[in-house]
Image (tube, rainbow, N blue to C red; front, side, top):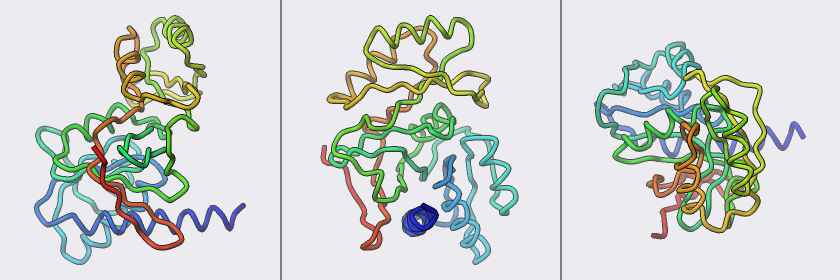
Length: 225
């Protein structure tokens, strides 16, 4: 098990380093959250030591703390971002639709993704699927009446479980299992119209490219629109 985890970490590292090669001096860079994002931060920090000059926009307090430790200059989100780089829990191979939010920062991650001229996703090969749904869809909800929100999601076919976690925004996370998701676009519309839902982890049509680390090195996937 440890050997498998080490191998996957190596794949993530390769993918992160591939994505970071596209960052240029002067860029505003969106910084993701989670285990894969750590490899992005390390790769950026190394390039900064070599002379790269950028400003990072973190998607969580955890990422902000880690970036400062590594010497990555930070700023608040006030305008467009040149490149956002983040991980994903699942990537649908053809359209590059994503499930994100295992790290609990999905709202800020989506804000940064939407603000990015290009949004690069970094994963290991085990995250590529033909159809989304093996992983639950994280849904951030306001604490007030969260049980009613959960019942509404359940009535619409999801199986929500509240995570023992409070987001940086002061909200709860419901991990919602939908099974194999035939139409992520339809589920997106449904979740968007439930009162109490702040945001969800379905990222549709946002990925510019996906850098996939695996046994054969790094493969870059582009969306088949």
